[in-house]
View (cartoon, rainbow, N blue to C red):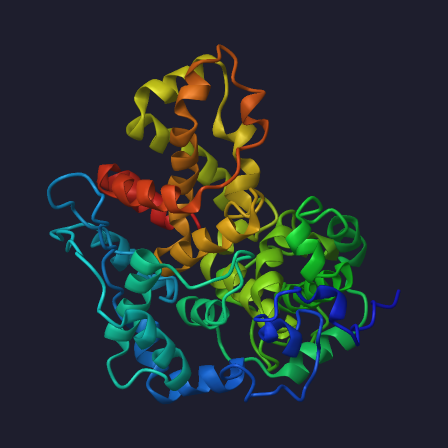
Length: 435
């Protein structure tokens, strides 16, 4: 079954605001190998190569800076936990978890540098000048203290480049993405088509900017890549292709068991996880590499057929809530409401299922800066924000069928205040549950 052809027009996706020339130049539906590197900043390839030129190997192995504490945090200096280094190897992860919280005190940041926003823009356009650790710290502090400059629809010219850096995505050749599309329908194509039409179906911003055809192409390309990395039950050799277009071995982070059903490589929630990337990116190729790298490098336990990471995350929501707010947790337990009943979509999609989309982008800025495992505390924060409404109901199940509109700034502030309250052992589980 042929895939929908890339659209040749983007007029219907462009915002009426004249300042959004970024989307007019390269929409999420454009698939072009002649990428205009001069339009509103460097391309994905040139920007990533620039990072590599200044020492991407150091970036991959560098110790990440501590989570800074907002001025509104509880009194006193809070013990700090370093963000899990999602770029480290499995062996490094064990050592990293052992030192997540030992002997560290939070450095209270009164304010960012005077010209931090200007510095961030220069950093993105020109690359770091030797101090990679300091440059990453600047990006993270800017995300936490200032936020990324964006319009009312959540569109930011720098966001997609900052996400590529924070997730440490490899360079991608555009023709490699096109080659995946030209392979036609993947074994998971029917499942993909059954999901795409309902992806963020009630969000007018997403529907205006991202077509279903674009979402189908990205997910089908992702399915081919995962299929190639998936050990087939047949003994016949099959050439594999990495996400960046070069031959590769199956990814150890996504070591899936052989299965007789090739369609099982595509899982529930992948469509929603890819949606914010398509909304924010300048091209499908950018959105594709971000989605692929998030799943395989940062959420590998979420991308396995049985979703072990998601189920561990649901259990952690209940346990973290019992520590953060024992009264609220006891009230929900008395009503037989566990996280597996009301929080499954939020854990699975990093809260991308909770509107509005601009608030999701703001929350993702924070999660990508300090670790996607903090999404568990973000869900707890949303429950705490609903505390009075939940406690007022003897049976709050109806209230929790859909979480209220996301208030990302308040959620982030609460998450930062929750971090030092999680016990040592549970913190290690929180960091490790995504793997």
